[in-house]
Length: 333
Ligand code: TYM
Image (tube, rainbow, N blue to C red; front, top):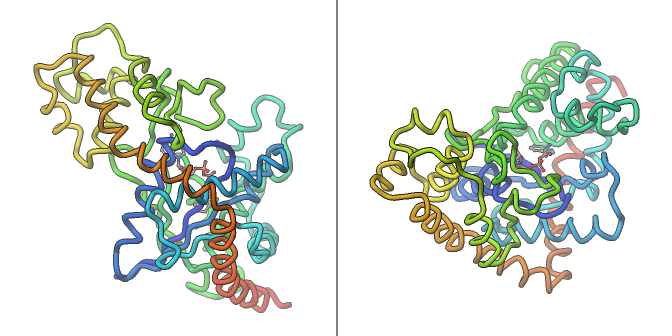
């Protein structure tokens, strides 16, 4: 069955191994399936829900685009664009925001985490962020949305908004309820310093993550220093379930090698921590360093990156504009 794929990544600083293994790697695989239509968006409007420096934002938009391209996304096969160049996204967010309920948004755990204790000071944009995300997805009649585990709740909200709109305006199946595509085993890559915390761009410690722009030495060093524990080398899956740091490192290895956890445990039977870490560093250098080198190369040609975004935006706007028109018609405009 042909799938309509949509996904987005925020241009808020270095993309990291979590973004790659949780999302971008899957974007590339989906692009390879012949019948799929793939649309991938640099969600710069989402980025400004927290304060951004205008010069750095522009650089980050290009860097996120370069990471898409360097990872294997091809502008001839997928539509690659940035959200702020397609005004229909914002218009759709307003229209859908009048369907979404406060009670639904109040349940969003990401808002609670990001707003922290002082939520009165969070931007209104941060609060309605999931409605913009619903607009992103619904304007393209997307059937499948590849994301990491942390975005699952936002996808459920998108489905609720679509269903309520269809019901309110008596239009069954007009807005398509999308399915999340979440990697089965390694949907959440954790910090290298704390196996209970998600690997994240906003972690103040650079040692907590592998950035997609890291060089060989940085990758090797970060794995060498990654937290483990003082227990014996793990022998089975049950062993790992109680040891979050090791579970994460074994998960990263399995995900990079496209194999299940059991095969990884078997592969390292009779080995020790330093042998495992050396091999992990080696496979990460093999897979991530070529992408990092390609990102640097692409970033030297800003004109090319800007052209990719402009061309992608023209294609995206054509589709999104039509859907906004149809939504407005249903509403009575
Ligand atoms: P963002 O920019 O935080 O993250 C981009 C993608 O990377 C995944 N991800 C992870 N996966 C596994 N382990 C991790 N540690 C990890 N950290 C991040 C995220 O789940 C995501 O798939 N709201 C979205 C962006 C967005 C979007 C959309 C996504 C806006 N509109 C429409 C899909 C469809 C976000 O902030 O992702």
